[in-house]
Length: 125
Image (cartoon, rainbow, N blue to C red):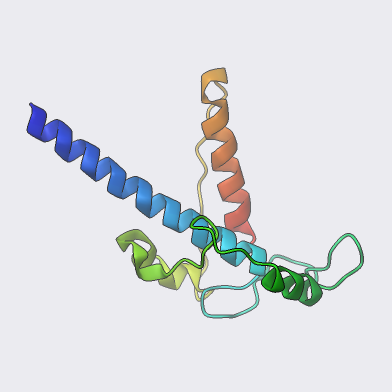
């Protein structure tokens, strides 16, 4: 009935918020090349840019020009149960496996692209 539909909608909204927070944390860690505990990530190479600048130079430039819109504001692991549960995995203290499930269907193109972007960012953590 109406009650269960409302409950499902509320539960779906909570899941989406958790996934959004997880995505923000993954993207922040991938951009900084660091785990949640501050350890350097193992993405390979020295983090240098195409212009020959070091990864450190790039991080300093990013931190000076960082905006704090809701999508780019620093995310706290305690913002959602999902990110709180995954904190140790996101902190560089473990080896984490991410399985990206995608579809070749044209109607799923946007979702597949979003999933692949997330997986690429998670790999850089």
